[in-house]
Image (cartoon, rainbow, N blue to C red):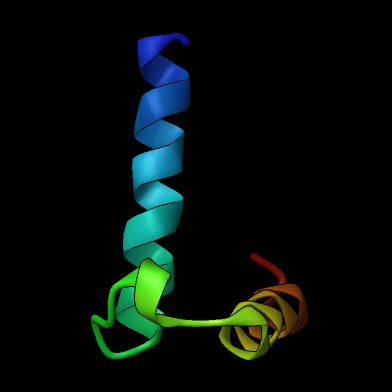
Length: 45
């Protein structure tokens, strides 16, 4: 895996965690993932 890919994955994980009040991704389920992606899509990011 390239360094750029790893940095991108880290960015998304941090963004997801921040959106969910810094909870660990392993402690969340599909509902949190769907809300996160729905919000990302609506904000145009």
